[in-house]
Length: 177
Image: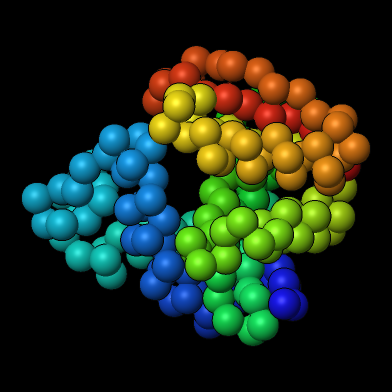
């Protein structure tokens, strides 16, 4: 199985747009989000997936600052990773990279694909990293994934913090690579 992390071009943005609703559906189990009255996982009155996709254009408008990556397995899309740098990071100024979104299609989970993608990502972008996830029992699988993956990718050199942000309590992981 060949796992490849590639920066997603604007021409391939539609691939992430196609996968993104699946990500939001998965998150709804963890965060308890509901669809809006138009059947879209959004709090606002966005009516179509096409409208929702426009929100994510920002990821392609700031090259060198925002990094939308596709995860591919044997040249087939398997997920995505969004990485932000200042000023789009929510934490202290010493954080170089914020892992904003990470999604792997269920077919590829538990097979080492996520760890390979993260390893490629942090090898490509050395510095101070942060990622946040839901700290509740509904999210144990993701918490276990991050602990195992960060342990392996950083030789156990990472920290866990709990912080209260405007959108709720988060489990925060920080590490240097």
